[in-house]
Image (cartoon, rainbow, N blue to C red; front, side):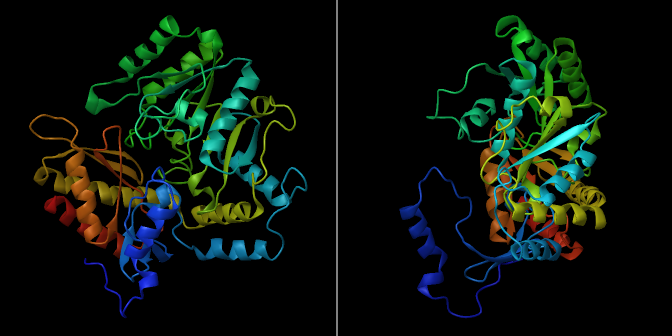
Length: 435
């Protein structure tokens, strides 16, 4: 499919090139922008730029739009809330919708026993507050994260993130007593035994486990390449956590709310966690995040220790209620599995004809394709960029990821219509052949 040309001449004020020049003059280069065009409107899985060209959006605002652009039920919820009020600061004048959303999250999360939830604004805030809660609950300061993990761009988020470029260079020093252990990756020859052995070596060489407040792990690594954590690894973490009185935090910011075919990716394993961080697709594009955890852990922070001026904003909360309704009523967990199976089948069909396609992995509709040079087995970031560019030329937006930039991740809205999804599969096949 070739992007649709504008139907009428475009004035200089609405050309992508003009806005690109203004962006470069007005905003810093540290805010990287992937695409060279500017959005004008979007609906479900489709997006049009200011010059009238149409694209299929398989980025979803980086896993934010599981329910698609401008879902009518989300739109209606926002309008209804706008007609009431759009800010009070929950910590000043509370509102019932915050409490009822916390009740719904408590009922959904796979955490054992009584639970409580606090809301924030961004995923990084959720991570920061989960660490604060864990430290308050344990009286310890150490935190162990994992190679390839991504937990945000705040200083604590960067410290936890297991990738230097582009996230850490030039921004240190970082908070102390944050350490990294190996994360399993079969394609790199790192199995669960190796990863857990590396973790135990930290206890011998770098930190007394009695000083560790928490492990923080993504059940499926996002920026790290959509690498699912094996159940054996999660179970090993749980056993070590129990042995040493350490809390287990699941960062579900990218995996949550039906993306993997479950409400939360931790539901793929029968391994209990103590705290879950979530954000992204919870509110359909509005900034809302949170932490849910065991009540005794969540209550460790002193009154006033958690919160924020915009935390749990009423507009975002209203959108979140609508998103949860849509996921349940439209069967989006099941839809995630269905679309994921179709994508996996397409990639499997293409794999014999694309020698660079080394591995297809993931859960539900959180799938990725990793590309490596067939002669050496080394990560092939250049081929990955060619696939991405060829897809974009044909009207399909794709994101890359992975420690070496050699992975394409697929983040289609779970509401993508069948015809649009089939069109995207055709573009993907053409892009892989063209690359």
